[in-house]
Length: 88
Image (cartoon, rainbow, N blue to C red):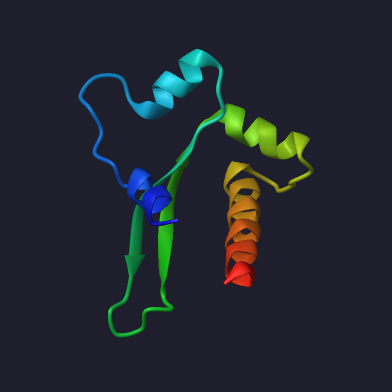
């Protein structure tokens, strides 16, 4: 699990972004760009995500819904976080 988290925060190499590389290959892409939380209230915060249209298409095909990309990805991420918390 720690290795997966480390991979999410790996520094980017100069040149084409990871998102652009995935899109050029026709692959879905999602990445956590930043995690923000209040040191006084650690439960308050957010994750900043980046994704491509192919990822949203994949979510739609998997049954996720929403009025826009942000809602669709948010529903997926909320579901993912819920599942992870239930495993602990």
